[in-house]
Length: 408
Ligand code: C6P
Image (tube, rainbow, N blue to C red; front, side):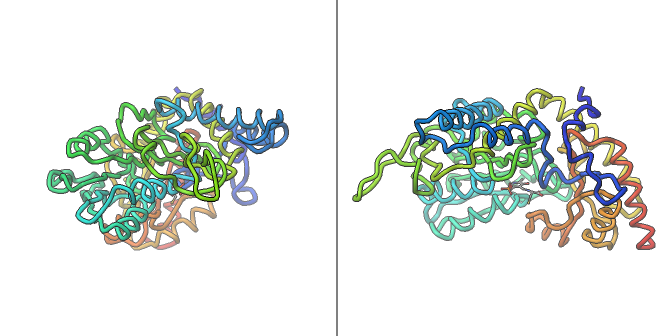
């Protein structure tokens, strides 16, 4: 079991006041997580003692920097059980991982008559790059719908997933509903028609043990900043034969084997996809984040979030006029998305902010999802390993204040 009081001491920002005299209640980890001291210190130590460019220098600092940066890659690979570190490509974030696959694999493998299958609950990062490549190649984008309670509606899957489907890309966990989707079932169904599968694990890897080999997906994307790591670093995992067959994404230093005035050849994996000086401190920071999460144990982190989510959904459901969106707590990750009668979610977020509570309000980069619900925005409280039931109580009490202010 997670010792939450101890965990909270690992996050210096949790001791910061939101406003003078008002403690911070951070319920926006799905947007970006806070960073434990171990991560902040790993990045500081790198800049203080090891800072140099990687893969280039013969000098000691450069070798140390390279070892720290590549060592982090290996530990990140182990964290998601990737068969090798060469299949773990550093990107800026999950968004860049989708753009990379769309621009390289997509342009090389899609054409008129081909279909890309997504779901209606995707984040824009898993919609827009595919729309762009569809436009460039003549392929068509189709969508698996979701039900009123925020589950994927798979009743028509046989008609949506056909021999024309070249790619299925879907989120393992919805950033709005929190729904944990049936990854294995969808991967098996897609592979049965010969489609390649990409999984958006941006909201999964931070919150539960993820095993890419057990999922058997072909590509997977996630972001460092949502899993206690820094911004500016994300991961694309891919199966080796696909990554090897793909053309590079960006050209420049580090991604080449040989350059002549007539042309160039490409470096081995993973560097073929990593042009230019990378985010070195950030890679090292993400390595420290997976060490931190592994030390606590992903199963314990998940169990704690389940406990908080059950508690939160039960408490929130007692607020008159509040509507919760998404499936019950047992089927979702640590997210409570809600609306409160006609009160605009931005007004809710603003009033909560005065109480020191940070939530997110808006479309959460999932406009098609909100459009289908007939909403322009929702309010979302999201939980992580440091969230307490006392913080949920404060959220509930503050929502009562919102009701009073709006005379509900
Ligand atoms: N969702 C949220 O508040 P980036 O921005 O590349 O780090 O992550 C993109 C992304 C992709 N997929 C899912 C499921 C996500 O939730 C996100 C990021 C944040 O919900 C910021 S918009």
